[in-house]
Length: 171
Image (cartoon, rainbow, N blue to C red; front, side, top):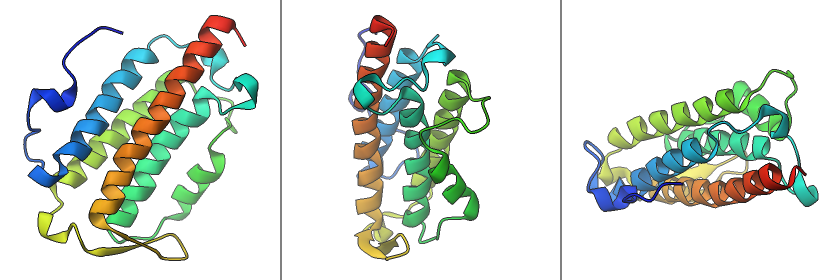
């Protein structure tokens, strides 16, 4: 990977409220690194599970899915049937047609949608209660948005290790 200034060091992202800049920076950093690291990653290695750990395909699906689900909760909405179908499909290619490029493009689209939502999020709503899941677990708008950012970065790190292992070891 090439060395360059990280997103957070480049200044504010236009139209993103100041308190949500760290969320936007993390999502944009993740997108840059994911696109660079997955460039020309072979489709035949997507579902390899080194040492029984999660596959690169799982991480790619999960990265997009979590952003979609958590940002849905931040809007005080319930998950749709389609979102539940995507959740249940994480970790495998039930269609036999998924490619690295398709999964990377899905993540890029999800980041774009998340950034749009950030531009529309009023800072005055950040401490508003948000129930998570069917159980309505307690959170707030900012809690959910922060979790989306940190969860994305955590899975990006796991994805990068998985990709390196399966690329270099042919596991």
